[in-house]
Image (cartoon, rainbow, N blue to C red; front, side, top):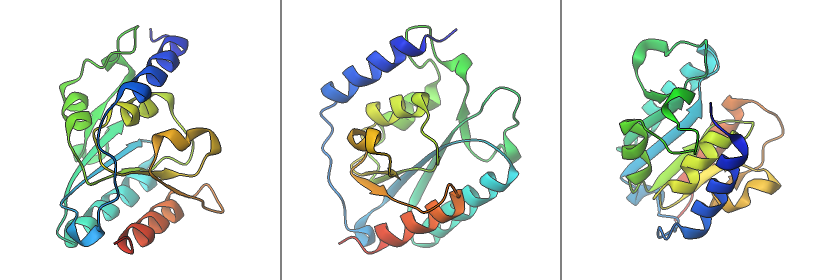
Length: 170
């Protein structure tokens, strides 16, 4: 069983010690993009799938990682996933797909949850992505180089705004 207090301390420590070079890349020049999110339902899966297709249509290489909560299915088995069983008591990830994802130097890493998740925040802290993009939450500013403030908790609106604003970065 994962100890959330230990994970919180560990995440803070990782944030302080991660020396990854952070910068926003011109979207046109970006080659690799990561997407991370918590699986919730078929609707969110479809939104992520469409977002991935839009990015690929723009010529980007896209990798997706999803947290699969207990009791939910991995829709279509399209994306790499991890579960809470892939995390030790001390907050270390044991899944190879998580290690590959955090070590990838994505030009952009999009976090598509509208409600913050401690497990994914740990991955964001570990990530070597150049520009991490997420929903605006005052308490999460250290996890992102670009934050999007939306009027609702709609994943669709969040994705549309992320896409719109990153495409105009240059």
